[in-house]
Every structure is written in C-alpha cells, then in structure tokens.
Length: 440
Image 1 (cartoon, rainbow, N blue to C red):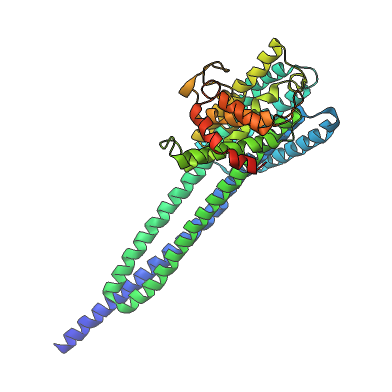
Image 2: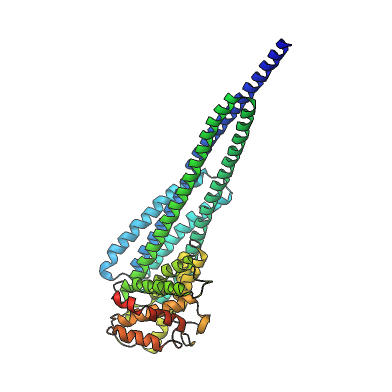
C-alpha cells in the first residue's frame, strides 16, 4: 500500500514537474516571441514612420521657403531661392530612402500603392512649383494663383492625405502588435496558474518568467506611447512655426514688423478667457476650442499673399477696383487654410482657421464681405477676430495713416457695437480695457 502511494506520489511529482517544465518552456517561448516581435516592429514600423514624419517636416519647410521665394524682394531673391533649392535637394534625397522602403513592400498592397502615390505626387509637386516660380516675373498674381489652384493645391492635398493615411496604417499596425502581445500576456498568466497548481517550485519559476514577459510588454507599450507623443509634439511645433512664419511674411509685405499677428492672437485669447470667466457660450468654449481659435488667429490674413505689393503698400486711398481686389483676400485665405492644413490637422481646427480667414471682415449688420453674413450667421471665432483685428489696426501706424490714441480706438469700437461688431464681444473686450492699457 505504501509502495503504491509512493509510486503514485512520484507520478504526481513527475507530472507536476513536467507541467512546470512545460510552463517554463512556454513562458520562455513567449519571451522570445515578444522580443522578435519588438525587433521586427522597430525595424519595419519605425523605418516607415520616420520616413513619413521626415517627409512631412520637409514639405512644411519647402512650402515655407516657396512662399518666401514668391514674395521676396529682388535683393533677397537669390538667398531665398538658394534655400528653396537646398530644401528640394533634401526632399529628393529622402525620396531615395522612400524608394528603398518601397522596394521591400509587397506589390499591389494598399500601403505600397500609397507609398508609390506619395513618391510620384511629390515629384510632380516639385516640378509644378518650379514652373510657378518661373512665372513670378512674367505673370500677374491672379494668373499665378489660378495656376496654383489648378495644379499645386490639389497635389498638396493628395500628398497630405496619403501621408496621413500612411501614418494611420503604421498606428494600426502598432495597435495590432499590441493586441498580439496582450494575447501572449494572457497565455502567460494562464500557464503561470497551471504551474502553481501542480508544484510550488514551478510557480516560483513561472512568476519569474511571467514578470520578465509582463515587464517587457509594459516597456514596449510605454515606448510606443512615448514615441507617438513625441511625433505629435514635433509635428505640432513644425506646423505652428510654419504658420507663424508665413503669417509674418505676409505682414512684412505691407510694411509691418510681423507683430500684428502676435498682438491680435493675444487679444483674441484674452477675449476668449474673459468670455469663459463670464460663462458666455458654455457649450462652445471648451479649453480645446480656445486653444484652436488662439492658434488659428495668425492665419486671418493669409489671403493677402496673392495681393500685389502695389495695392498692399499704397499710401493713399484705394480705388474701387483696387478695393475689390483687396477684398478677395478673405475668401482666398479661407481656401489657402484648407490647402495647407487639410488632411494633416484636426478637422475642427482647420474649420475654425478657415472661418477666421474667410469671415473676419463680415459685419454684424450684414454689410461686410465676402458673403454679407449678419449677426450670429458669422462664426463666433470670426466675430472675435474682427474686434481684435480692427483695434490693433487702429492703434498701429500704417503706410496710409498714423496710429490712433488708445482711448479713441476704444471709443470707436464701442460705437460700432451692433453695427460692425457683435455687441457681446465688444462688451467683453471693453471689460479688458485696464489690462490692455497695462500691457501698452
């Protein structure tokens, strides 16, 4: 009987040790598989992701240099064109790397088609920009604008959309990989429980291996999270710097120092914060909305990029024909915003920026332009922008006027409440009078 029990015990111990050993082998397999999966992602996903991010940054830089080349004065043209050529060379070198990645992809896949489309569209985009630059001396701004609308902006939107889709594909691949690693995690825990049931020593060893696997998975997830946040911040900074650079260039063409866009953005932010403090428009004024409107404010006059220097810098009153041309900058600006940011920025942000550019010259009484909107038909960001833009224009020196004293400017804004401006926005603005005086 005792002998039978001993044999039974040995069998139980053997089975327990065998189960523990199998659990350990499986845990080791999970650890090795996780390591191979991580290395594969680093090699494949990040190579593609870095290529996409680098191309996106170079295109922002190229767009900035292209705008600078188009509006530069003759004495600065050589420098701006040299910078543009250097940026184009960087893009073409990156496209060579892009081409090497393309060769590794399976033909006919969605990713391979997108990669090839991006490659071809960027080359066409560079060629069209070279043609547009050659038109600078011989063609009118309107002709250049029509050429850009017909050939360059559609390509820009296509490239931006394809790059954005490639980023989403990379993110999707990372999410799938995370799910696969989560499956390994679940299996590892299951076998750890089995090992605990059969033998205590097996569970100790299983816990050690489980900890290693789980710790490795957590480090990998943290790595992906950190990588994603870092990329988003880098694109955010590139985008903001590009927008501010283009806005400064537009302002400098009309004799400004570039401070107008910064001052008006600051005034817009002050009005928004005062509105939130007073409980105005609570369903709209979220922290994100305030951030989007403040960041979009510098783009309100982007449409002036197609207005000739003769009109922009005219010291006297514009003729009726010149004024009609000047008025087109609003609708053109709204379109330029979509062409610059469509497909690569949050839709709400793009809509806000376009509304500001398009409608900041509308009036509360419906006598503004370009659409003759009135009252609350005018988007809230544009109504706020109108007050900030006019006030800063009044107190600033321009080629056609002297600066107006602050007190007179405040009085004019107050008189125009209900005519030019939204009365509620004017009320909020006047509440900030002491703070604005203090910042003079």
